[in-house]
Image (cartoon, rainbow, N blue to C red; front, side):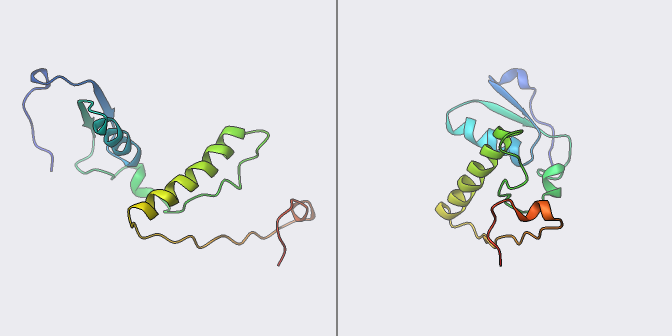
Length: 117
């Protein structure tokens, strides 16, 4: 899919992005919109064929991250979820917010403040 191009010494490249998965392409897009000259390097013959292709397609709510022991993971997961839903809505990207059913498996889990059915 990707052929050989002219040697890079003919170009002024400010940034090299390693990996053409979801994160690499998102970073490349954001930087290029700000005028950065960049190159995306990918070891595969296709974009998004590495870890990004193993994505479960679930937008995580952050419920598994303890706010005390991993406050940043919890905070960024919750913020990221909101940003991702906003991004999809603003661009008419089809998505579903179908919710999640949590089932307590022991007595300790019953008293965490979640609504009961």
